[in-house]
Image 1 (tube, rainbow, N blue to C red):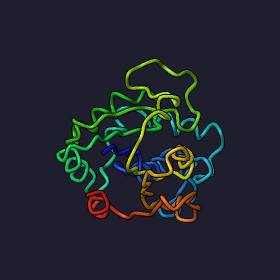
Image 2 (cartoon, helix red, strand yellow):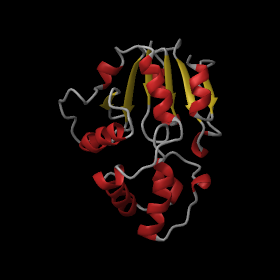
Image 3 (spheres, helix red, strand yellow):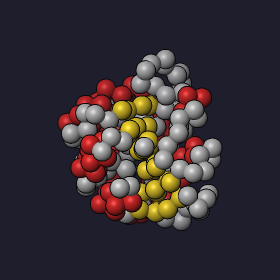
Image 4 (cartoon, one colour):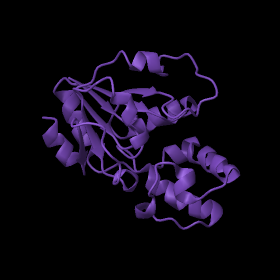
Length: 198
């Protein structure tokens, strides 16, 4: 069994950290529950300069290492690996964040998980050729039985996999999203995911 998992806001509480960070940097008070858009620039009402500074700061290694784990994530993921399932964490983080992201996983007991960076949102200026950098063409050759994703902007990556059960991790920015197919369902925590994916 092959399982796709997104990183931010599926296994780490990234948006909650950004909510605090944007207040520290710009004095903008936007609580996590009021983050209605996946696009942080839109959720925080930032100009282009502010948004660029926020993204740079939020991807500094010491910041990435400080994100809290989504409760139950590592326990459930390790239970799947123990059963022989193949787990792939495919993140839209820029490739230059690979090393601290890998370190975060290792520090949270997820040393056995494969991690790939993929330019999901067109943010990379240059795609670096690396075994840890997943090109879209290569991604589309992969098959998954289950997926865990939070971003409505990433739903399109499963169009070619109508049999994949896509579990949408409940977040403020996806609560009004229209699911593109019957294979999409909302999940609220990792305990539930552990029961859905036996």
